[in-house]
Figure: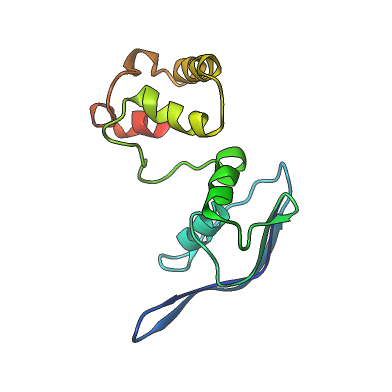
Length: 150
Protein backbone atom coordinates (compact mmCIF):
# COMPACT_ATOMS: atom_id res chain seq x y z
CA UNK A 1 0.00 0.00 0.00
CA UNK A 2 1.12 3.54 -0.79
CA UNK A 3 -0.06 6.29 1.52
CA UNK A 4 0.88 9.95 1.22
CA UNK A 5 -0.17 12.45 3.87
CA UNK A 6 0.21 16.19 3.24
CA UNK A 7 3.29 15.58 1.09
CA UNK A 8 5.12 18.66 -0.22
CA UNK A 9 8.21 19.24 -2.32
CA UNK A 10 9.85 22.62 -2.88
CA UNK A 11 12.70 23.34 -5.27
CA UNK A 12 14.76 26.31 -4.11
CA UNK A 13 17.30 28.51 -5.85
CA UNK A 14 18.81 31.79 -4.72
CA UNK A 15 16.04 33.70 -6.47
CA UNK A 16 12.93 31.57 -6.36
CA UNK A 17 11.00 28.83 -4.58
CA UNK A 18 8.97 26.48 -6.74
CA UNK A 19 6.31 24.39 -5.01
CA UNK A 20 6.33 21.26 -7.15
CA UNK A 21 3.93 19.43 -4.80
CA UNK A 22 1.79 20.99 -2.11
CA UNK A 23 -0.07 18.97 0.56
CA UNK A 24 -0.65 15.87 -1.58
CA UNK A 25 -2.60 13.12 0.19
CA UNK A 26 -3.57 9.82 -1.41
CA UNK A 27 -3.81 6.13 -0.75
CA UNK A 28 -3.33 3.32 -3.26
CA UNK A 29 -4.13 -0.09 -1.85
CA UNK A 30 -2.44 -3.32 -2.89
CA UNK A 31 -3.86 -4.55 -6.19
CA UNK A 32 -5.25 -1.17 -7.19
CA UNK A 33 -4.16 0.74 -10.28
CA UNK A 34 -3.82 4.49 -10.49
CA UNK A 35 -3.08 6.90 -13.32
CA UNK A 36 -1.20 10.13 -12.86
CA UNK A 37 -2.16 12.77 -15.40
CA UNK A 38 -1.66 16.48 -15.78
CA UNK A 39 -0.04 19.16 -17.88
CA UNK A 40 3.70 19.52 -18.33
CA UNK A 41 5.30 21.00 -15.23
CA UNK A 42 2.51 19.97 -12.86
CA UNK A 43 4.72 17.72 -10.69
CA UNK A 44 3.99 14.26 -12.13
CA UNK A 45 7.65 13.26 -12.51
CA UNK A 46 8.52 14.72 -9.12
CA UNK A 47 5.76 12.68 -7.48
CA UNK A 48 6.85 9.50 -9.28
CA UNK A 49 10.46 10.08 -8.24
CA UNK A 50 9.34 10.46 -4.62
CA UNK A 51 7.15 7.34 -4.83
CA UNK A 52 10.14 5.47 -6.26
CA UNK A 53 12.35 6.80 -3.44
CA UNK A 54 14.63 8.43 -5.99
CA UNK A 55 13.95 11.89 -4.57
CA UNK A 56 13.26 13.20 -1.06
CA UNK A 57 10.21 15.24 -0.06
CA UNK A 58 10.24 18.28 2.21
CA UNK A 59 7.11 17.91 4.35
CA UNK A 60 4.45 15.34 5.09
CA UNK A 61 4.77 11.57 5.18
CA UNK A 62 5.08 8.70 2.71
CA UNK A 63 4.33 5.19 3.90
CA UNK A 64 5.00 2.11 1.81
CA UNK A 65 3.36 -1.04 3.14
CA UNK A 66 2.71 0.70 6.46
CA UNK A 67 6.28 1.90 7.04
CA UNK A 68 7.40 5.50 6.68
CA UNK A 69 10.24 6.12 4.22
CA UNK A 70 11.01 9.51 5.75
CA UNK A 71 14.55 9.69 7.06
CA UNK A 72 15.70 6.31 5.73
CA UNK A 73 19.38 6.05 4.82
CA UNK A 74 20.46 5.79 1.19
CA UNK A 75 21.26 2.11 1.76
CA UNK A 76 17.80 1.44 3.21
CA UNK A 77 16.16 3.31 0.32
CA UNK A 78 18.17 1.28 -2.20
CA UNK A 79 17.09 -1.94 -0.51
CA UNK A 80 13.46 -0.79 -0.51
CA UNK A 81 13.63 0.09 -4.22
CA UNK A 82 15.18 -3.26 -5.02
CA UNK A 83 12.57 -5.26 -3.12
CA UNK A 84 9.34 -3.27 -3.48
CA UNK A 85 9.43 -0.86 -6.42
CA UNK A 86 9.50 -1.41 -10.17
CA UNK A 87 9.95 1.30 -12.76
CA UNK A 88 9.91 1.56 -16.51
CA UNK A 89 11.72 4.80 -17.18
CA UNK A 90 11.14 7.01 -20.19
CA UNK A 91 14.91 6.89 -20.65
CA UNK A 92 15.95 3.36 -19.95
CA UNK A 93 18.81 3.97 -17.48
CA UNK A 94 20.82 0.98 -18.64
CA UNK A 95 24.54 0.94 -17.98
CA UNK A 96 25.96 1.52 -21.45
CA UNK A 97 29.15 -0.51 -20.94
CA UNK A 98 27.34 -3.54 -19.46
CA UNK A 99 25.79 -6.29 -21.55
CA UNK A 100 22.05 -6.79 -21.35
CA UNK A 101 22.69 -9.83 -19.15
CA UNK A 102 24.88 -7.79 -16.77
CA UNK A 103 22.33 -4.95 -16.61
CA UNK A 104 19.69 -7.44 -15.49
CA UNK A 105 22.04 -9.20 -13.09
CA UNK A 106 23.15 -6.10 -11.19
CA UNK A 107 20.01 -5.57 -9.04
CA UNK A 108 19.83 -9.33 -8.41
CA UNK A 109 23.36 -9.20 -6.98
CA UNK A 110 22.31 -6.44 -4.59
CA UNK A 111 19.34 -8.56 -3.62
CA UNK A 112 21.78 -11.25 -2.46
CA UNK A 113 20.75 -14.00 -4.88
CA UNK A 114 23.26 -16.79 -5.47
CA UNK A 115 24.85 -17.02 -8.94
CA UNK A 116 22.76 -20.03 -9.98
CA UNK A 117 19.53 -18.29 -8.90
CA UNK A 118 20.51 -15.14 -10.77
CA UNK A 119 21.32 -17.08 -13.93
CA UNK A 120 18.00 -18.94 -13.83
CA UNK A 121 15.97 -15.76 -13.33
CA UNK A 122 17.85 -13.85 -16.02
CA UNK A 123 17.50 -16.65 -18.56
CA UNK A 124 13.75 -16.91 -17.86
CA UNK A 125 13.27 -13.15 -18.09
CA UNK A 126 15.21 -12.85 -21.35
CA UNK A 127 13.22 -15.72 -22.85
CA UNK A 128 9.95 -14.14 -21.70
CA UNK A 129 10.69 -10.80 -23.40
CA UNK A 130 12.23 -12.34 -26.52
CA UNK A 131 15.78 -11.12 -25.95
CA UNK A 132 17.59 -14.34 -25.06
CA UNK A 133 19.60 -14.30 -28.29
CA UNK A 134 20.74 -10.73 -27.55
CA UNK A 135 21.87 -11.30 -23.97
CA UNK A 136 25.48 -10.33 -24.71
CA UNK A 137 24.54 -7.16 -26.61
CA UNK A 138 25.24 -3.70 -25.24
CA UNK A 139 22.27 -1.35 -24.82
CA UNK A 140 23.38 0.69 -27.85
CA UNK A 141 22.94 -2.42 -29.99
CA UNK A 142 19.23 -2.69 -29.14
CA UNK A 143 16.24 -0.73 -30.37
CA UNK A 144 14.38 1.57 -27.98
CA UNK A 145 11.62 -1.01 -27.55
CA UNK A 146 14.14 -3.74 -26.81
CA UNK A 147 15.91 -1.54 -24.26
CA UNK A 148 12.59 -0.89 -22.56
CA UNK A 149 11.98 -4.64 -22.22
CA UNK A 150 15.32 -5.00 -20.41
